[in-house]
Figure (cartoon, helix red, strand yellow):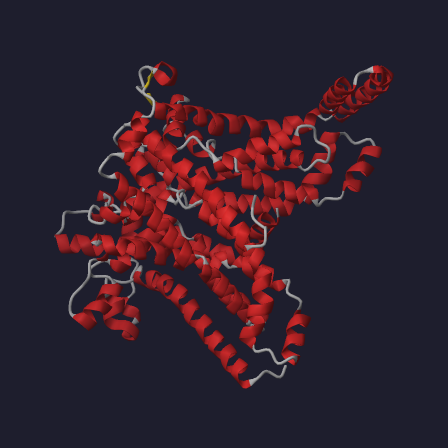
Length: 333
Length: 291
């Protein structure tokens, strides 16, 4: 097989040599096309390598994008996507004018923006704190503990939340000790967002600090030494030396996180949902799931999902431009 | 190292705070672990008065008395392994191609992939496609739709770009074919990136429940996370776990023990293994951030 491949390659080389004189007489665009074709012929293996990725992407990413046209149709499984009737924006106006709309939209927006605003600074603070630990061993052990929850599944985290917050669980035992009454966390809509965000920080903040810790490792220690001689306090050195190093990383991560605001994770919200906390826990993704896959209202659910995606793209562009302004022209795009 | 007094106080406070934060992370895990060997609320009532006689394996015995959790475990091993294989092979091959200088159509192909990071058809069209392809209730529904990760492809590409071109040129002069160069020179050098991608893929799939929930109706096919969901979230107790009918309070007691032990069974393997791979995980985060 090796020989065969080599022969093939030699053949290509000969081909190239024969064609070269012809090429010189060609027009400019034709010449370029020929060259490209030859490159592809010569390196067909590279294109063979990338073919599976392209095929899978077409099937599982691009075809569903086309499939999203059912948001503008009255999809019936019997007639298929093509055969179903066009209804224009009916599903979108249906969603926007439905009594649920404002509640679900605000739930989505609140849950993810509070999560972002509260969750974003904590990994940065953790990294700055870890950076002050000089003993490498101690630092490594703390990191080992802080990263651990990242490896626990969302089902288990949610299960732990239910166990810890149950009327007879450890948290309520403490509350009962102090106040004499237990508090039913999981059936109170007002508690849902706090539960979601605090459990998210518990699980993710340590892991999210990795990238900041690594950025801080690039800070030149001489800068700190020089500042120390000038009499700068620890806090001033962190403020003037460490933080500026983190700024570009923060900008990129903030844009990415803010761009995902409406694409908030379905998985944990759905698990932490109870029939009692629905007024706060119903967000667009859980609503799409229930309407589409549980109730079978495919077209309406697709329209709701599409509406969400469009808002998300606008948010991404908006946040990017704001960060660009604040960050001296440096953004993501 | 002559720090001012206020700086020294600050550093001590910093250390103490980090210890407190570590305890806040560690204590819930420890609580779950200990509770899985105890009758409900023993830990709270007895605290440090706990004695050896309080510990039992009752929760674990009941958990494994029913085959559901073991079946889930084996299903998860199957799904995670299959998914990892497909994802890593596809990403490595694509990443290698995209790392080549002068690749014709590189920009178009990159845009083709990156578009899918920002736009997608959404839940319902993807579900309908998987259904129409006849993949519901098959392993393929878990493996194929998410096998392409643009992030993985970019990770692989970044790694391959760092391999010096001279290596390939030298082999080519020696008469090696492109395929042989990839197989004998590039792949052996790529063990670290393959390992990082495989770890990420395996753990991601091991901890996922959503695709299985929508694509696999057949309970026999449910992975571990769905079994856990029925135990932990939906409060279902398998008949095999309780045996005879019993009083409500007794049922509650047993179901709580089963919950704690199921958490330990599902999470302990990864938590024990991850410290050994910590540096690889960190590497993955870093390579991805550099672009």
